[in-house]
Length: 76
Image (tube, rainbow, N blue to C red; front, side, top):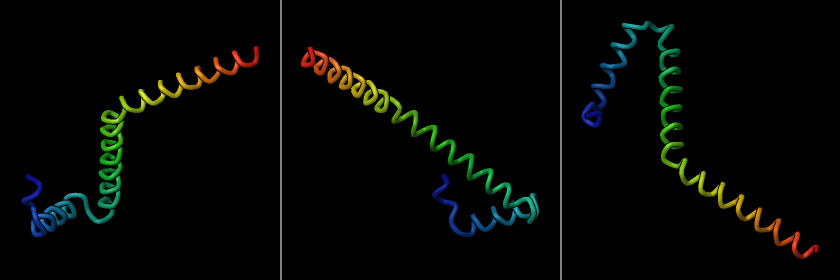
């Protein structure tokens, strides 16, 4: 759907946004929209990659535990 907008469509959207919000508010609106997209992208990446991060954290804890046990056995 968004692939069919093209350059003339983008120009029309920018002109309408300029008329609605005015030149003083337009940078604020753009910044807020950009921050919203960034947070959305970050949240989706955390959802997609969250399971993998949890697994590696668990594996790291198991490795540390294994290392600690082997050190205490050699020290005894």
